[in-house]
Image 1 (cartoon, rainbow, N blue to C red):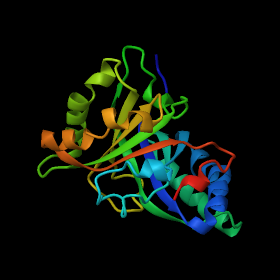
Image 2 (spheres, rainbow, N blue to C red):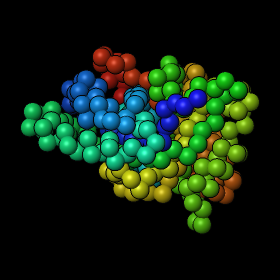
Image 3 (cartoon, one colour):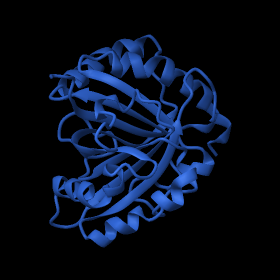
Length: 255
């Protein structure tokens, strides 16, 4: 049976300016995420997550090649694009930007830590009736862990992604542990990379629980496991929880 197919993602990790965080947050979730991206043909889902000071303290490695300092990046937003429709989304976003700017509906009160378009590589779901990756941003997950991997010399991103799914996801596939699914992306040649084009795999782990409750058992050793495999290195492993749209929840816990 045919269904909508996840093909790409735009993933943006940003740090809002401290003195403007309330207005920035209102603008992003009430206007920008919809007007500039999810209204585009080809974009079919959107989710946003936040890292409090306590969550940021769990990040590693330090220093990180992704976030400098490693605590940089309080909000991460994730968008799903249909297979083969990156250009349509980018063209739409570019076409509406001048009008939004003229209407004073753009906001520069944030710094991009890691913002790029990605291509879907594959996923590992929990057990035989896993939540489809296309629905992951709509499912009420309680946590997200994003892990940026950079390949070792001579290893390409497809090989690194395949290795990660074959060697790191046994418990997920068997239905064990707190991770319901992990979805792999590689930075794309299509779309854009506001923070620079990098050969990397970004793994998005979706959890049924708060990452703090399972960090030591499920995530603290992931970086070492990647390095031991010899295919690459974890350049940032970062936990998040969902935002509460329409509220200022967690804004007083960011720093």
